[in-house]
Length: 624
Ligand code: AGP
Image (cartoon, rainbow, N blue to C red):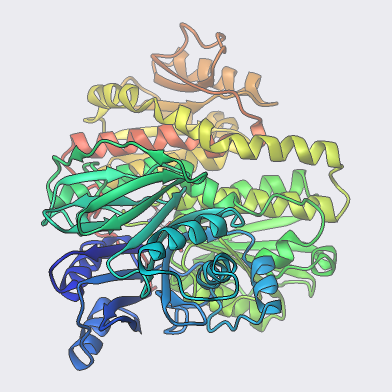
């Protein structure tokens, strides 16, 4: 999730833009840049790495001017580099754009623009927006004749509006044109943008902390809205060009709260970001089902998909649990023999892999030492690597042959939540395309799964409504010393993940178990002080889970059951029943994990634990 800052007013823009980007650093980034209107033309300064590098560059080559844009980039298309850093310009170098989001159809738009003679300097999807606007301006001015001065702002607005009509995807955009000095144009669909109203100055940002020290009077843009911003204020329009009346609000948060979007912890914010993380990771990857979506998105051709004889997944922690879920999918739907192993075990056991094994690595950070070592070992053994990773340009994706990125934005909480759900969605998408390419799913079956995958963001939103109930349950049991989580089939890994979430942030001992294993030992643990969380959503093994629950109940267990809406067979058999929207067993881990994340969060919060930075843990385990 990139950082966006804009300023127009009487003050020097550079220090305000840099300060704003620093306030957004928590969002994570790999490069940064500024564009400032200086003596009638736009000047850029861009650098790879941390903002300190941009700061150093600006000290050597300062930018003077009172209107400008700043950006921190979290790479999605195109590796982290100066050329790919925002802002991006058009051919005239008079118009600059910064962007957060994903332009789905940038390849086709880029081709059309190149056919018209536009020359591109980067690999990014963002750059096409600058050239598309330039192209529209040229059309509006009938071949490029300059507009009369008081026509330039409305013509810029119209050119942006026309350009957006051709763009598909998610965007928060800010545009500056040297022919319309003092004006910024903003547009929003799916990625956040907010305007800060100061005294004779106006700010724009992707998040409030960027300018909270200067004004608390803000207006959030909604999807499909545009803004024309000057030092005197802002006007809002919809994509049809019709004016939209919006009322400013006053932000009450302090800056720390603002960085967390008003949530008390990054982890809770990221749990609530999961619907967007799923939307962004699914975007442009489900249609068309047949011709080469995965080749475009991950480099995995149909030939390569057909050549796979079996799959070996390597990962750690939560990512390992995502791999375990994928094993059920890849075998039951794509019918590909699949092994899953913790990378720390795989790397030392002298594994034997057949030549046509596909090794899939799952990693949020892409820097986990054990997973990277496992990937390197698999490469030495001669197999192809597909990386599912949330960090473009990290070590593991750089080592991989194919990259299917999760697009969840930076995950700040040490406990992985939205990245886990993003990994599941990416692996489900991979399963679908493999199954279709290998003839294991027909169009009708595939479309049924696609329809449900497109409903996941709203299903997760429904699951998030359990937040209050999870808080109440946590108040009863946050002093417990042991918890047991049980589930079957695809929800056995969900049980493991629920247990990991609880233990890593609340320090309560928690175990996840295959429900069918209870009689083989864990049932000895059952007593009134050991709450049992049972995942009992609809499945072909529901009756089995029901009997496991009754066994535990008969021995005095406290039962917290997760079921689907309308399920009554557990009424009276569980102490707490959490009801989730109905979803197929295939996709149920993606929804079922949400109450488990919320339970872990509230338990840890009530125990006064450091939820975002739990003791002894690091966000990325880059050492053995
Ligand atoms: C999960 O909540 C933990 N933070 C940890 O298990 C994590 O999933 C594991 O270290 C793997 O990290 P990665 O996804 O960055 O490779």
